[in-house]
Image (cartoon, rainbow, N blue to C red; front, side, top):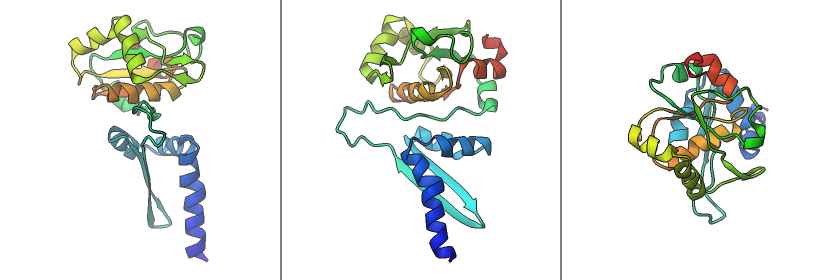
Length: 194
């Protein structure tokens, strides 16, 4: 019956991708120009709201730290819509790829500054470590001078760590931060940043 099928469908299509990192659900929302992710990402939660056969389904997953960490858990923010990146003014581009993977996702953007997010392969720095590296690279002073509301595009090779860097920068107090995906993604939308 429909009453049995609908909860099962919700579980399979919406909850499982969230548990597994949100990749499937974010990709499907991005493909359908879902605006819900950007709004909810700013509130540090992920929310999906879709219509299925006329029934509205909403699934929410809060970003909380159950391991008792110091709040350094980073949420992978979705790649920003091209129209948003295109309309940003004087933007600062932060490349968070590891030094040994600078060829992934495309050639380095000449306007970007590289500060890797990882401290080891697959292990992100804490917020304090990332901020210290931003300070050491001279990026922090530049960003403070520009103001917390000045536009920032983060990127890595494909958008995973770029999304986490977007979350890190937001947690560090910046309010106009966007995940650009990879350098070729940014270049396709903003050739002026090449």
